[in-house]
Length: 252
Image (cartoon, rainbow, N blue to C red; front, side, top):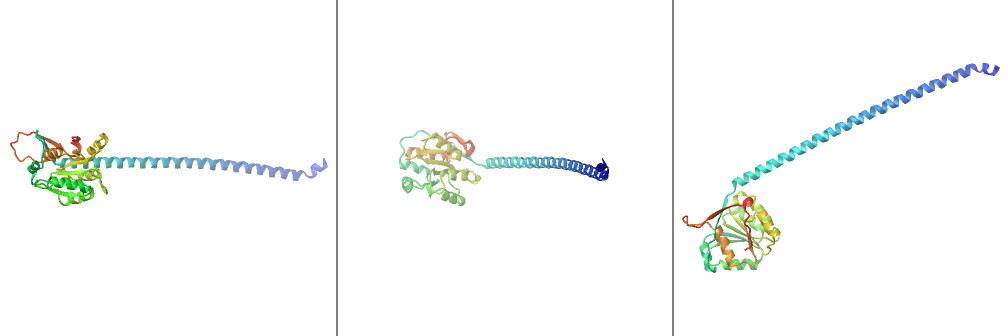
C-alpha cells in the first residue's frame, strides 16, 4: 500500500500519457479517413471529367465523319451531273462481217489498251485498210497518259488484265474524270464468270468482248458506239449513262 502511494504521481502521469497517445491516434485515424474520402471524391470527379471529354471527342469525330460523307456525296452528284451521255444505237441484222465492213467506221478514233503484242497486231491488221485511227497503249498507265493529252476517242478497248495497272483500275480512274465520260469502255477478257462481269460493271466498263475476239462481235461493238451520221436513220438509240446507269455488260 505504501508502495502504491509512493508511486501515485508516476501512475497518474503514465495514465495521462496513455490518454494523450490514444487521443492522438484517434485524431490521426480520423484525418486519414477524411483524406481518403477526399481523394476518392477527386478520383470520381476526374473520372467524370475524362468521360465527358471522351464523349465530346467522339461527337466531334462523328460530326467530321458525317460532314465528310455529305461532302463526298455532293462531289459524286456534281460529277454525275457533269457526265456526258454515251449514245448507243441498236445494231441491225447483218450477214457475216468481213474486213471491208470496218471501212464504215473510217475516221473514227479508238484507243486500244492491250499488253499482248500478238493481240495488238491482230487488231491493227484487221483495221489496216479501214481508215480507223487506232492509238495503242501497252497498259493502264500509258492509257491514262494518252487520255490526259487527248480525249478525242469514241471507244476504248481495255484489256482487263495487264501489268503495272490493269483495266479495272484504269477504268475507275477514267470514270472519275468528267472530261472522259463520253468515251465508252469495252473490256477485253477471256474470263466471262459472273464475278468478273460484275467487277467490270462496277469499275465503269460499258461492254465486254470475250477473247479470242470474233470479228462480228467487234464490228457490233464499234457500230453500237459510233455516232450515227444519218440523222433520219430509222435505227433506235439508247442513252447509256457511264458508270452508275451502265449495266449492259454481256458476253459476246
